[in-house]
Amino acid sequence: MSKEIKEKKSKKIPKTIGTKIVKKIKQHMYKWHRTIGLITIIPVIFWTLSGLMHPFMAHFFKPEIAHDKLEQQIIDKNQLQFSIQEVLQKNELTQFKNFRIVSFNNATYYQLKTIIGELWYFDTSTAEKLDNGDQKYAEWLSRYFLDDQKSTITKSEVVTEFTSQYKYVNRYLPVYKMTFDRPDTMEVYVETSSGKLATYNPTSRQWFIWFFDTFHNWSFIDAITNNSIRIITMIFLLSIIGFSALSGILIYGLLWKQFKKTDSLAPKKGLRKYHRQIGIWVSLFTLTFAFSGAYHATTKWTPYTLSQMIYEPTFKTKEISVANNALNLDWNRFQNINIITLNDTTYFRCQLLDKQKFKKPKADSSSKWGKKDDKKSEVVYINATTNKITPNIDLEYAEFLAYYFTDGAPKAACCEMVEGSDEPETSLENAKLLESKVLTDFESREYGFVNKRLPVVKLAYDTPEKTTYFIETATSRLAAKIESSDMVEGYSFAILHKFLFMDWAGKNIRDLTMVLAALTILIVSILGFILFLKK
Image (cartoon, rainbow, N blue to C red; front, side):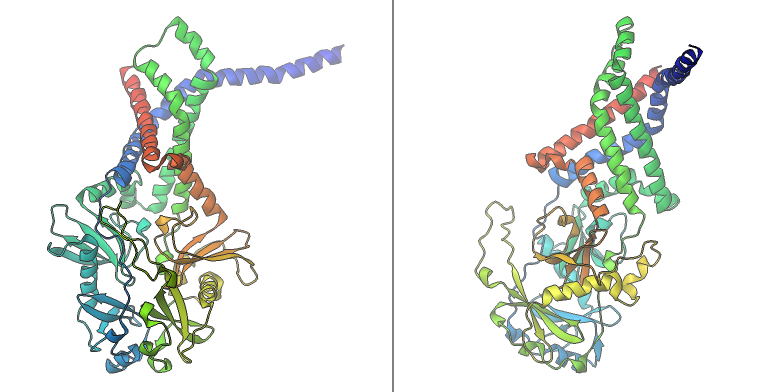
C-alpha cells in the first residue's frame, strides 16, 4: 500500500507543478502581450503604412509610359556597307569583346564593346565613329520610351550600382539615368547594351520609393551602421511581432472563456471591446506578414551579383574570316547579330524574325497606347570560318554558360563577388539535365516578370539543391539561378506576404484584400496603444 501511495503522490507532483506553471503563464500573459505590443508599435506603424502604399502605387496609381520595350525591326542588308571587320581595321582596333547593331536618329551603327568595357558606335555606312555615341543612344532610347522629343534633359548620369532610387529589383547594370525637365520630373533608366527600359520614376513614384525604402526596408539603418545590423534588427522585431500575435491568439482565442467570465462581471466597452474583437481576426494576418517578412529578410545577407554574371571572351579581329554582311542567311528576316565562342569555335549568333510570325501583327485595341503583340524570333548560329549554319547550338551554348557560371570557369571578374561563400557550388559535370527549354514569356511563377530578361533558356539539373539556371544566350548572361530553398522562400513571400492565394480574383482584388489586412493590423495596434495611454 505504501508503494502505491508513493506512486500516486509522485504522479500528482508534476501535475501540480505543471498547473502552477500554466497558472503563472496565464497570470502574466496579458502583461507580456501588452509589453510586446508597446515595443513593436512603432515598427508595426512603419511597416503597415508603407505596406499600404505599395499596392496602391503598384497597381491603382501606376504611371503609364508610351513604350515599355524597343520593338525589334528588320535591318536592311544594304545599310551594312561595311562589315564589322572592315570597321575595326579602319579604326585600328585589333580586338574587342562583342558587337551588335543598333538604329537611331535615322542611322544604323555597330555597337562595339571594347576590351575595357566601353560601348563605341560606328556608322555601318561610313565606318566613322560616333562621338559620345553611348550617351546619345541613351538619350534617344529614353525619349523613345517616353514618346517625348521636346522636353529638355536636365541631367544624364551612368548608374553602376543599385541605389535608394534604383533598386536591385530592376536588375540591369550599368544603366543611364536621364532626368527630364517636365512637371513630373521624370527619371528614365535605360540599358544601352541591350536597348532595354530598366524603369521610370515620375515625382510621385520617386517619393513613394523613398518612403517605402525608408520605412519598409529600413534603409536609414544602413546609413547609420550596415546591412547586417539592419537585417538582424528587422528579424528581431518581426519575431517579437510574431510573438505578440501568438499571445493575442492565446489570450483572446484559446483562453477566451476565461476572459468572457471577467467581461460578464465587468463588461468592456469602447476601445477595449473593439481592440479585442478586431484583434482576434487579424492576429493570423499579423503572423503571416511577420513570418514571411522575417524569412524574406534572411535572403538579403548576400550581395546581388547577377549583373556581373556575364561571359565575355576577347575576340581578335584577324581571326574572324567571314564578313558579317556576307553571311549565308535569310536577310529578309534579319533583326540583329552578335558573336560567341563555343568549343574553340567562333559563331555569329543571328536573330531572325520567326517564319510563323512573318506577318504584320494586329494592334491590340484594348491597349491604351495601341501596343502590338510581341513578335517572336528565331536564333541561328553561323560558323564564322565556314559560313555554314550549325543547328541546335543555342541549348548547347546555354549548358556551357551554366557550367561556366558554376564551376567550369577560371576565377574571372564575374566570379569575384562570390569568393567569400562558405558553401561550395555543386558541380554540374556529372549532374543530369532534367529539363531544357526556351522561355519567350514570363509564363511561370518560377521565372516571373521580376527577372526582366527574355528570351532565356531554362536548364533544370538533378542536383541536391534542385538547381535551375535561366540563361540569356543573346547577352551570355545568367538571368536567374533558382534552388529549392529559393522556391520555398519565394512561395512563402508570395503567398503569405503578397497574398498570391487571391490571384484567382485578379490583381486589384488581391491587392485590396492585402490593403484591408494591413489596415486592420494598423487599427488594432493604434487602439492598443491608445488603451495603454488612457490607462
